[in-house]
Length: 166
Image 1 (tube, rainbow, N blue to C red):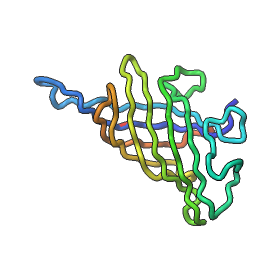
Image 2: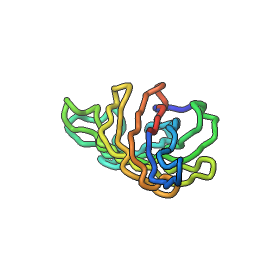
Image 3: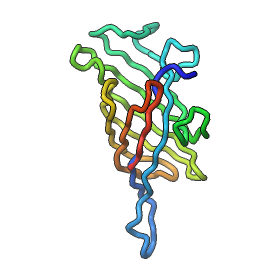
Image 4: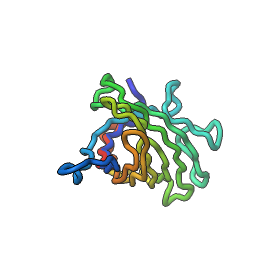
């Protein structure tokens, strides 16, 4: 049983892959991925607070909290489904009462799907309490070289999210 958050992430992305002839206007299709996050203090946490050290939730207001994450990306909403990559992030939590539920997040999806290996990079501000967030895709490597577009993140359950890349 996972303890934490599960997110559905929809990656809406465009790739600079060059198509010749009548396929020149094609872009990569939308992609839906699922990310499972296990929060501290679980022994197998996929998110770790690196500043301030030895701090567990609930985090004090007035102190920016810096965390790093490394979560599996799954093909479906099942925690038993195939792992198709990793989400690696660094997040800084706001330090005022007004923004303590917001995080400046920078991350990368490291994907290996049907021989299409590479990364998709994204920055942005994410809310811990909003059911939906949207981030920009600012580039990629490998099969996703020069990717652009947006990531729509939908909180599905308390342990995960669904992301749609467009």
